[in-house]
Image (tube, rainbow, N blue to C red; front, side, top):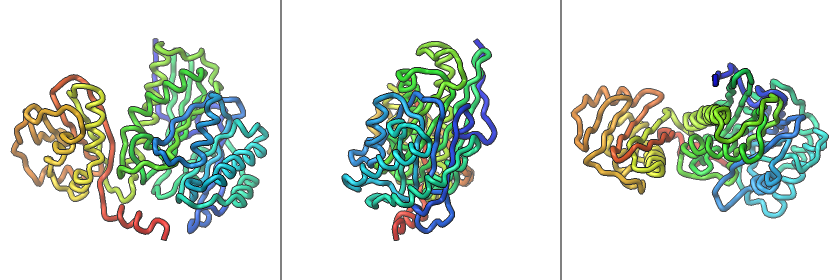
Length: 405
């Protein structure tokens, strides 16, 4: 069977057939006059819907509302704001989240139960419902509005994050699009802060749940900026079936191709989040190979990518590679330091547990690149995993020291 996946130039959540989006500035985001801070993603066709959410025990009102509504496995719209997290806002927060969905439903002429809600911004601040109401009354949706929506969900992000791919399955064409935001409070599990995925593929709810979980495990659950997990982390996928393809069935070649393409979309967005970490100047990619188990590979890679010492050395261009081995050793994974090999962008630093003499200036030159890849071979098995992170700069402290002041 012929399966081909192609990235779409300027792709976003409105690249799949039947999806519309829009965004407005309505005054929620203080100090950013004119910047969009409220948006809607909508499909006139009913959607199979599924989501993954923060593992933080302190959950924002929109997260609780979405978890409840997604039990039905359907939705048609997401209304989202930036500038206010609607977290730790008591019972009023739930009332406001439900009202936000109801106001959007009125605009879209659908039932409120088919509207999901997401918010991002400062915790502990009441939602400005007058601004929400005013903004939704001004909302205009279009099939080119995906990038406007990607801008509307930004907080400390420095660029909008969007992508889409087209999947050709033996004559059937399916499109998958996605947007995300996140630069701080990023850590598994879930590490997206906010991400919305759309597809025009025909699928059932069980397949959608399994596909999203698998894709997230290899992408958003392998990215870290600072070790903190937000109260609002939300990943939602809507599938409206507009492509008219034959139903995707688990285990089939067509289904595997879809999951692979969905994972590509999620990995792209996850890497964008790591690259745009608050104050970050470099993207770090960590490959762990030869692990005794998949779990070991994952926890070793994530621990290295999260280590403040590794992140600080990366920022300073210091080839202090012992920090990488130390992080792997404390991760909980099986590690034998006498068998490990370590590489930096193909530059061998350690082999068979022995340090390899290297040119420190040449290594420092590699560390000054905008993207640096570390590869740790544990030589204890055949399992592998990849994690993404970023360097730790003084700017990270500045951003978070002055976040609300």
